[in-house]
Length: 454
Ligand SMILES: *Cc1c(COP(=O)(O)O)cnc(C)c1O
Image (tube, rainbow, N blue to C red; front, side, top):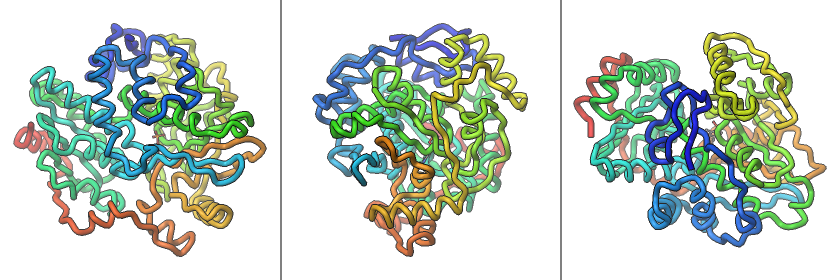
């Protein structure tokens, strides 16, 4: 299988090369050249374990590794790293209401599904090329910690994660700073997430420096993350009782960068017979506005109780746009250019039936946590809570639970008067954090990486 750029002006690459380059040279994102129909075994549950199912899926896309190599990459990613034997267990709350728990990985959020695999793919790349890499990223929380846990202790790679000091949750900070791994460099900076992101962009734009240290990214646009995330939609389906399958199942997905829900929608194009995909946003509702009106209007980002969805530019949207525009890379390029210029945009022929959408205020989030607890005796985290807004109960709903509630104890306490806990978070409290504070200037970060590179 080859991977093509959404802007159609770069050559198609095999899996390993597309993975290693991240962004295509023409500025586009890689997508598979075709979306093959998945075999029945993926839908009827006969691919029993999560790793088996992952192999049945990924072997269509990663045709660079041998079957044994791919199996080994998958086993290292999903076996013994998740704390539930089903990896992504499906909980039933009512006849036609299910929650797919995606928070059983090392950092208790769904990003572990993508970044555990990405960590092992980086290791594989380093072993093949013999060249060390240095991973640089900025995080407002979950991505940085999932990347750190995907790469902690691996040889030939050092990880530099910038984050806004005092503006991420204390538990998220502990997940990044208490790893005890000497290849991990969490860097608090004065400023906002956007300031951190700008420095990262500047350093990636310094091509000489990028080549000098073998700089690599871990952002949500990497195609391996999207593919890894499609797997659990099939896994959910395999666990769904026949009666629930027959009642128009809809996946409801807490959404920020559009990565998670895009993975589900692509699974649909490969034969997953879900009726709908529903986008749940918080008060940063650019995607809600897009899918209810067809117009794409980035606004200011406002802090919310669901911080990992505090995003107003949904980077993976470009992949959806590519398919929506019938794979016309030229048109994608023009539209992305206009979005980059800050234009308010009406997307041509926008079929908003492809997705449903809701948005939740902070007040909604608190009352949804209360309501789900009262109705089902089940505690949802503030991101997952958004998925319960205006739920249409006339058909089967599968809510994707993106984080464990114990990651957001204060919000849960405000809603229901309880502090949820998790053993892995309790353990973190006994370790001392290690951080490497730097001045909020790209030049300072550049020097720090030079001095501490792999
Ligand atoms: C990252 C994240 C999201 C948003 O996912 P996208 O792929 O960016 O749409 C939702 N919930 C949690 C807990 C997250 O960490």
